[in-house]
Length: 305
Image (cartoon, rainbow, N blue to C red; front, top):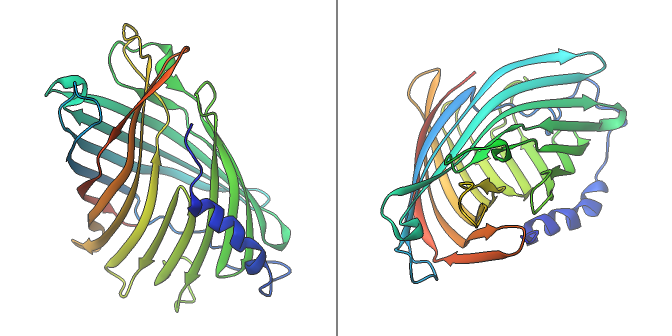
């Protein structure tokens, strides 16, 4: 069972002191830092390579990882009574080189269609719900077990126009870890009166990710962060007795966004991965294989609004 990190606990511990700040009776007409945060891109695509690392299982070679991911925002609209709908799709693929003692790659893929609904209430309160049906599979001998229907629910509180908090959970029906928490404290500092423009400094602390984004100009940005990759289960080949595979790690990273033109931006990220585990589960037992720490490089591009 995966542990909730100290990052999440720290965020929760800070809530009482933050709540003592002067709050507004109603945030009607204000920019809301959690519910109304501006997506940084309309679409994006990334590729990363994690350097080979030694597993604590002698039968395996060093394992390197190739990651391919992408995301696209398809549609959004305002609903009645202060609500918003967002529809997007995303793909995350991991290819393990050296897994099971072979040089060939072993793929794991999560392809999801995400429907997010945000509802605003009075005095800065809000609610977010998200449905994430999709494929969670190793793409070998797929069955109906490769499809899953996770969903999340979170409450939101805007303390003031530049600060908000989120607390909720994600539910994975049928998985070994059924519930995963969501915690976030988000600050935004901006000199632009237009709330549709990204703030020049945003800080988000929580679980599973904490990050700082500094935008000294309208074109490029610097990013620092800490991310826990607690991936859900991936269904293995139906002939494999291990049945399900999991992959967990924690990453420290820094990166930059560099514009190619007015509509396209490039990404570069370097980081360090640690606390890494490949796990296997069936109805009778769970086995874990630990991996050594490793560095990684990530490159990508995206389209702006």
